Length: 264
Length: 210
Image (cartoon, rainbow over all chains, first blue to last red; front, side, top):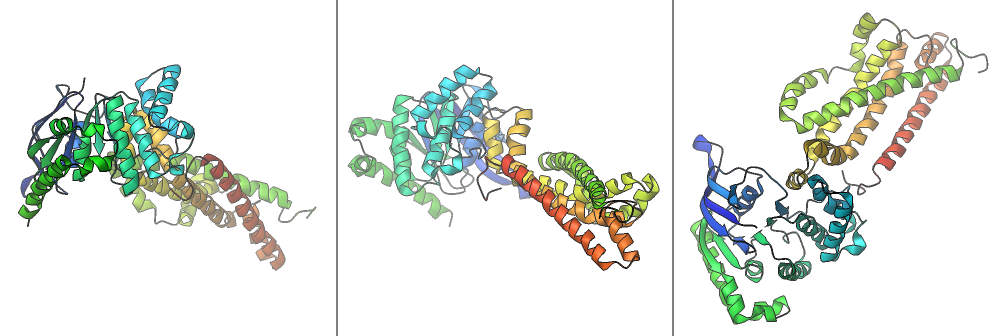
């Protein structure tokens, strides 16, 4: 189970003449096991969308639902991967991954095997007892992804997870995420400002307008990916070289550029 | 020094001073750190306590001496109170600032991971604040020693500060120096002790980060 529904969701900060409208009538459906990326001009409120699903911020109007239930508070059924990793520096890699399982009240033996599975899934076996600061940024983000995956969440929320990584590490992580999506498909909401990243990773790409943000267009990437057999290509650069990829990327770029132009 | 000076041997003076500092320091840490943590994490508590604290803070601990003596007499209790006041302030401020300095994403992560309230305190707030809490403790210890001598100059019968007082009346400069060096050495030794506790406690923390 795992679906996300934005129903005319709006977000306003403050009230009266000083009120700041961040989001307006956001409507979007993410279905079970679907990977949806949201792209938009900076400051359009895409991260706010994710924070509302996570339960960090309440909606001002409309509804945000997960599995048909209104979101009221954060919880382990909606695991978040943050841009700045947000690992506990005083906990080892294994302890970071185990933390959510302990909060769930799972017995020790079960926790241990789940943590081992998550370490293996992300290729972290040899770093189980390392501290986050001893790892590279890419490895730290692997830990954060493992920490989210191990909870077996209904939905996975990723807030520009590769934004803090260098270009080469980012490519590795993007390929890794595609691999993960095949091994253990999840419902994913992925926030990014990278158009290529969005087209490469997502089943659908939702494009947002400038502030106050709303969804202006949803591009179905999956249909094209399957028709053009992107998945037969092993490397990200080969996918990005296909005509269909370039066409989609350009289309989304143009759509975003209209928004930037409109703000001037 | 076998016959002693100012009514007691150096060891007795030192022992008495050390006891005052240790008691005052520990009481200050025990009260100050939780209060600072509470102020850092709980907005209503901060709104309530911070104004009072800000008002008391600029009063030099020594200004409390007359009141302390009136309330508690000339004994150790008054001195401990003054030392406590001096050591209390840095403990509170640093614990308070420490919680404020914890990366907000860590709180978000802990909530997302379903951490119950108590675990939030024991596994996020306290560890997150710990490096700076220790900074505060070092300042507290220093303040405790600085205040001790001043407190002892007023109506003491034993202790290092009393040695200084008597030596001054006796016009005995070398004894004054002995007293001063003793305080210096004691301060240095206790700080060293605190630093080694800090090293053990912060073994898991990345170096040079707080």
